[in-house]
Image (cartoon, rainbow, N blue to C red; front, side):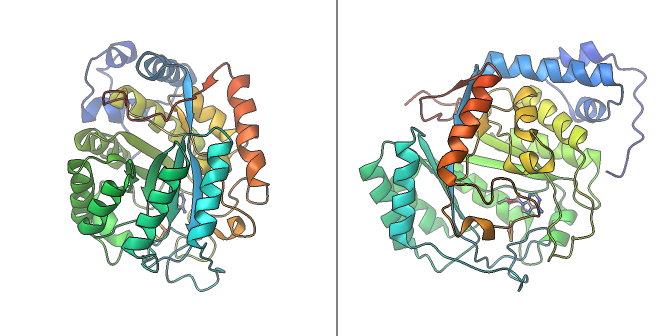
Length: 355
Ligand code: 5AD
Ligand code: FES
């Protein structure tokens, strides 16, 4: 992280933590805390805000990474089109539906359908998947398919999809353009706005530790999530992927990642915040650490073998060789071991009337 010299003699930590609204200056101050005692106080506050606004329940979202083909070329991502080293796969419509049934049988009430930006799956294919899952399983459906047409969003919403996850990645426009040669931040934000306007619960978020990113940029990421009024926001650490232009960039700092999640919880209050697989891959027990500083969602991976090992967004992704059915059981034990509860509900947005 570049600017690391934030000095705020005039601020008292407890005063800032108790302010009803934090401005950018406050957020930068909190993200810049260095003293262990201060950082612990920040984490405690985030945990109490999480308890007050979200309760003790942790929502599980079963994710199916159904295709690693990608038309996008994000420089940080192992799935980028320009990566010719990756073994590509696509699951069939039937395989995807079968996997969703496994998730449902495991008592998980949200299915996340994620892929690279893969236009091989036409509007009708995704519609068929959504309808069939909704007919067979009492689950919420989150789509995470990248930028698609507004017409497709309309149809998938009508078919029964509940949520759409499309991270803004970075709120810094210049950095966004440097990382995504064919995409613009403005365009991404227009998609998020449209998705929200047609009734999707929307998820956004950033990557922490991108080259050239500053603490101010991270503060802007948090404030942008607030402005979009996201229902879910994911703040995940950058981890280098070997066959990408960023392979030599260091992975994100654990403490800074946790501080970002904690500040995000304090600012965003009742927004769902996942403890990401990337955080779990950054350090051992990373996901548990995230749950202690504000997170209330975890996404067990249900991508079946042999595909799951090839959804290589970054190096060292956890659970890659595990039996997908074991993953959720393992997470449940960890969550209960922390004195938290696994939610039995779909875990819809906390910003809306319960459905
Ligand atoms: N490190 C961490 N997260 C990454 N993503 C892509 N590449 C990386 C990386 N190297 C995240 C992006 C994308 C999501 C599917 O994975 O935020 O939205
Ligand atoms: Fe854009 Fe993977 S290529 S996130």
